[in-house]
Image (cartoon, rainbow, N blue to C red; front, side):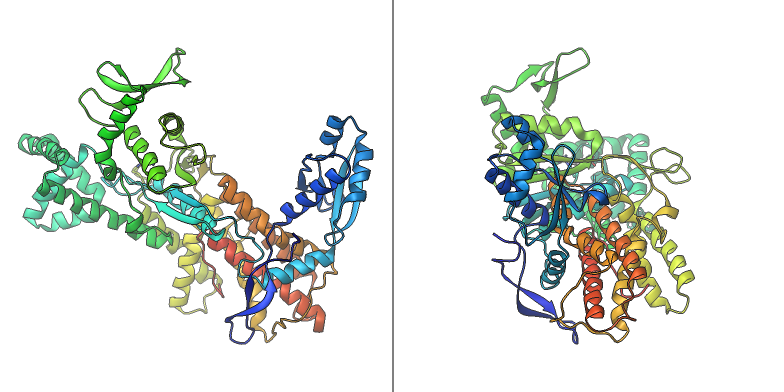
Length: 603
Ligand code: ARG
């Protein structure tokens, strides 16, 4: 298989109308790194080291070329060969003339690769003719991304922001690679607090007061008022307890009230999702309550399989691999002594459903890092109980806490938890001021539209660009800066690359790309690495690497733009540079879209 053979028809944008046209060009079926790895695997085999892994990596320094082959020494050691001699043989046997202009052996057996500018140029052309921009689709798998998952008894707060943003990006990346993606919103919609909430909802409904309407607009206030009633009014408290029993026994009236309450709460979440441009809808909600009927079945099944132990009246599972401080096996409680089920029981049932009914290949749980032990236990138990075969990948995609500038978990000035919708409104408002300062001549509607994309994009990007497992400090100033690794910087790079096409120049689809200047070559190399960036982000669930990739791309583009005049050049030189601008713009757009961030033509 060669990089530019055996691919389906792609499309190309018509220069006049901007529409996409089918054409004869072919797309890629391997990423650059995969291609190099495959070629050097073959070269190692031909040199006498069959089965050895070449470990190709982007070079750390420009003097090491573009890529470095690192696996020769290990192979030589195993075969008791001289590494330099083996490296020499590998270089002789490597069939890479279409990709590599120069190879040199460095140190005790590294092979430094200098890619051929003709190959990079050809890649730009191929990618431009491919709606996937040169990113090969992967063999289709069924992937679930479980994210957001707020508790509906209360308003969504910043704690759920990270899950929502990271999960949505990961789902988009999986979909881009051609997988069947199932988004799951595992909302917390069950528990004893719903007795109090449904009883209060009935009261409020009967009253139909303004206060009631206001309370429902603000779930926090609603919760506070219900709790106040519960604490101060004994009759109400009794009714609330009665409602818990009625809910658990499936009483139709109380269930209807509960449904109403969940609906109201979910519509609050949906307002946040819309504002965030997050692809979660009502159909993706499969809350904890959907597993209720299955919980006794799970308990019986665990008992039959000999996994349950009774401990102080509760049904627990001891998992040997988890120890407490004293070194004793840690108990995972499945059923309380009063018969109640737990968070873990629901999650076990969910795993069973995800394998048994949905037949998933991979499940990504985008949940706060502090729930790490919970998921380790669930995954281990699910494997033992046969609910999840090893072929179904279960991953806790953990993330750290969002901190305020005072180094404490993010709160409002009055110390309350910050409501997401208010935070997002503030982001838009701040972006509006910024856009107005930069571009006062634009009409207000346009400025508002830009502010939405910049404001929301900034909040999302600030989160996504940090390694997800570390805590990060929420800071308006850095996230809205037009310089540095920020959404506005990338959005601006996009408008800059696009604006060239407003100046009366047009792309000629037949013109060739020719890389002469160093800045052109580096930009093309960066563009050729897009597929590998997407693959890594998908494999390791690390959106920050997509951010880093796009930031480097924007930076290389800005350098190219300074060093290589586009509008002032002519003929074939101009055409070649226009193609670099076009592919850069499209890569930025597609990459940002994978992060759920929108671009605009002016800003
Ligand atoms: N509702 C939970 C919370 O807010 C998160 C649910 C995570 N998902 C799961 N399958 N347990 O903490």
